[in-house]
Length: 501
Image 1: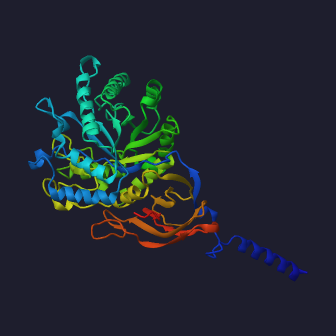
Image 2: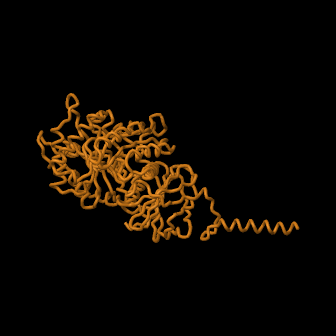
């Protein structure tokens, strides 16, 4: 009798074991390790794109004696941006930098820099969010109608005369809710300014040629500025065609889970069918945190660096952290993300000290720190992959995440081809079973792996130009419930795609 019961028990154990096996791998799956790309479409669909803030170089004459960059520098920039393949960039102007010469309106002031960038974007099909930094209000908080007339003349010159169809969005004032802005947090002044802008756009045949995007506010770790969206939406209606905010979260906010909630709170204020874009994204560190103290120390040790800088751009881990934040933006429903920013040489603090936030410093050799500073920094590697393989027009799918600290994931589909991005901002390595509810087979899928080491060091296959190349190319088969085993190392970013470019 005992032998009989033992045989029955062993039979049931074998049945349970084999019923849990993955039929292709012969491994017992642990559901806590499953990362599943679902069929759930986020509000980020259709996607506009990811790309950097690009522009400025407004001090190039002061620094080099020329109104433009050297041909060699332009060629380097264009080659790098062509690999980056951004779907969207942000490009900001101002009267003194772009269309006022000796007090007179003259759009040809932009020949040396702005038009070269727009020509490139036009040629490569890169969408542009264009706008102005803003001008101080006149006494008594009057709207400067004369300035708005010139600024919309310049916009008309770009759209109607130069025929830049790449310019898709227009925003007048940067971060108007902040005390540092020309609007200085005065919503009423901002609204009156936009009333005048819209009138002038209509009179200059611009209304149906470009989308007004607003309010461009910088938000922090709460939803206290949501009234800038709700009031604007209630007053202007469909005259505002898209919305945007800026965020500079701390390390703890992104990795602690509150960041995505704040993003979702603001996204919920905008109708699902309307585009909402993250108009600036970067990390800022609390001054009493370890990273914050390190950042301040590095700034103090660099004679070319302003206080408004993030020196972690030199460290490989920053690429993983930015990928984490971008994925959370897409998951929360943002249709595009602008990375702050592309090039240190674009902006200074007014005292010839750079705002270091870029992928490189194109004027390293000419002015700042030597030719070595013109090299591509580590965080370009994962950012270039996010820009390239989450293209304009893609559908964005959510992921069911395993119970693993630091892991974020998102997916995109365009023209029947897929991209999957996975970040792990934690230091621990995980074994993940990657699955897809759509059960697609990704033939000739490129697998990119980026693992941050100490300082600038990272693992990641590159070509002679420093551009990412796949670590492997293989069939990734999700059909019939199959899974793809992935080792997600600590401080790493993995991207899998069968998109062709």
